[in-house]
Image 1: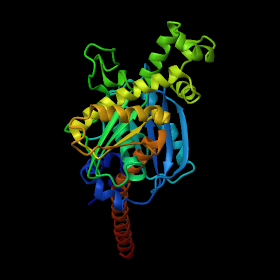
Image 2: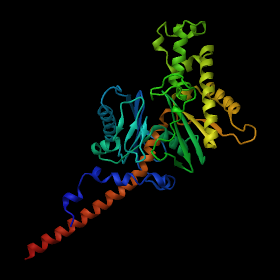
Image 3: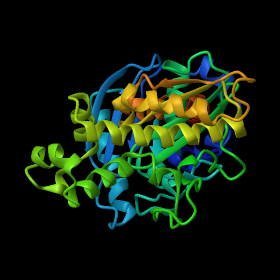
Length: 382
């Protein structure tokens, strides 16, 4: 017979088998998932964003902090996540937590195998956070989470074959087919940013050279602008004057702002980034043949300054151009919050199973209490 101790064992110790059942039933499950608030966490190379999200994708509250220095122990990042969740839990009834991590997540969605911009190496993130939080935790790649959000609530609604490309510090990616995230055998599908497009090209933090993200990402945009400014190029005088000679102050958002104001060099740099983006999209279309590409991440804020050249390059480089349907290329609608919203919505699938398991434990405990009360009453009657 179960004892009181068995029935009240830490929830985290019973949670892992529940979490591992989620992946194969996403399309059906999201329609019947409980309409309860969940927390989404988006962890990037520079920031950690947390928010409480309802069942319709609305953000009820958000918090943001800087990512702890990547040279520090992974425990420091975990501490940051726990602090944000506990802060939000003080004001909201949170039923689950979803983590969108900027790295490779294994097929069980427990371990972060490798994160180029963080210190995680084979890190059991889900289990560690589950031990510290009183609600179930789901971990997924941040681009997978963003793609899920755009499919559910944004630019990818009603698309059965969607590819998401996130342009930020690097390039992330995700594939959705028939409403399911395609993670691959080992969980690391969609790492488009590390396709090698220029043999022997720029060194990438992943260890290789010539990766796509070295030519079409926020880092690539800033690198090119700083190199022109450092060379004292006449075309860079506008941005040099803007930063008062401090080349290290040049940032991606600044380049986008100056391009919108008509700075010729910044416009040209965004066109270059966009053309590389279009080439990569054409390669992905040849391999995956989706109906829609959704472009997200911070660099996508440049909108038509970036996506216009990407569409042009895509049409020029598409295999079989003129004899095949062309995929739609759309800017993400949820902006930088897509990863957070998607992680929270994916966590809602876990919340349902967790709530059922918790209800069964409560029912067993109540039955045991009734049994124990009857035994006590019988002994007192003797």
